[in-house]
Amino acid sequence: MYPLSPDPLPLRMKSAILFGASGLVGSSLLNQLLDNPAYNKVIIVVRKPLPVQHPKLTMVVGDYSSLPNLKPQLKADEVFIALGTTKKKTPDQNEYYRIDHDYQTKGKVEADIMALGFDHTCIFRPSMLVGDRKESRPAERFFIGLFSILNPLLAGSWKRYHSIHVKDLAAAMINAANDPTVTVKRYHWQDMRDKIV
Image (cartoon, rainbow, N blue to C red):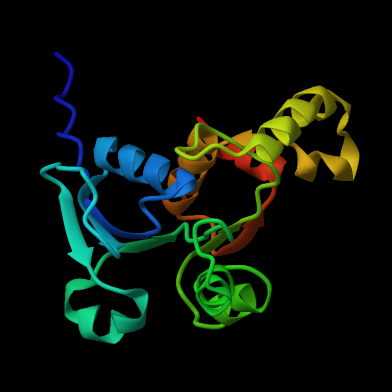
């Protein structure tokens, strides 16, 4: 007779907060977080309700300027930030700057976030994003087509400019969040590819 193997330890369920769930990357992140068995609760902060229902989903409606008032509802193990906008969607210059600069994790904001001392901080720097947008963007479609030709030619340090599909980016973000060995890391294309299982 062989000794019985002990029952595996139960999977610790996690919760996540997602900012930017209505965008191209955020919507893919939302779908994958809701489908991922490691998460039992996903909180999204939106300016207006989204047509999404799921047992794991908690939708917090509020303007990002009112975040201090929302603080009691914003408690989770992980935070995903996929904020951004376009000038077409946000014609008001002050509002565009506020969303694209003040709320997005790039440049000086990256350094500020890393200085907060979280246990894990992963910053993703994709180049051209490939995915189905709701709005028509002919110039972007042109560049996506161009990148499909250029991608095989990008080698060495140029690989970081390789395009990536939003579904792959979202998967890499979630896999990085579930990697306990990572403390602080900036991810470029090859790093993202390495995180896709």
